[in-house]
Amino acid sequence: MSLEPLESPLLPDLQPAVGRIVHTLLTAEHRLLQRELADRAGVSVRTVRNYRDRLEALDLIRVDENGYRLTLPFKTSAERREPVVPAILEGIQTLLDTADAFLETILPLDRYGDPDDPLGGILFWPPDPLRLLEHSMVGPWLRLAVTLTATESTRNNRTVQMGPPLEQQALSSCF
Image (cartoon, rainbow, N blue to C red; front, side):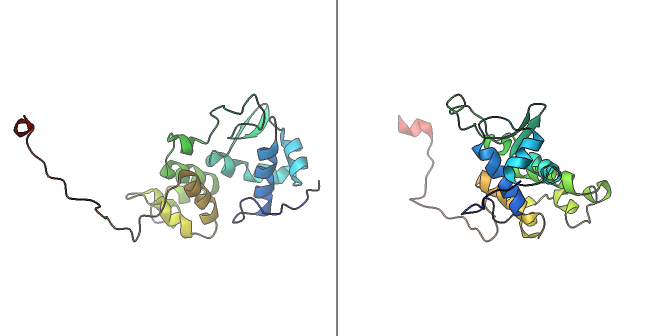
C-alpha cells in the first residue's frame, strides 16, 4: 500500500488521498475494483469508500459492478476518442445540480432541507451555489466543479459594451 509521492499533487486543495485516488484512475487502462484501486493509490479501502459519494456527486468517477473509472477516456487507443466526460462538462448538469448532489452526500436530511442552514440554505430561493466556495469543508470540492465548468463568480462584475452602438431600422427601409 505504498505510493510514491506525486511531484505536483493532483487536486492540492483537497485531502492527499483524493488526489491519489484520482491520479490512480487517471492512469488506469480499465475499470478498477475497489480493493485494486485502494492498493494502487496507497490508501485504504475505507478511504476509497469515504470519498466515493463525493466524487460521484461531482461526476468525476463512475462506479458499477465492473469497478471504478474516471469520467474520462482510458489512456488506450480503444477509448482515445470516446466521449466520456463528466455530466457537468456536457451541460447535462449545472453547477447548482452539482452543489445539490454534493450537499446531499454530506448533510443529514434535516440540514439539507433547512432554508436557515448555512449549507442547506444555499439551495433555497434564490439559489447561490457560488457561496459554497467560501465554506472551509465544501469550498475545495465546489472549486473543483467550478473549474470543470469554467464558471466564475459574478460578484464585482460589470457589463461593458464594445464597438459602436447598434441602431435598428425597419426591413422595409432596406429595399
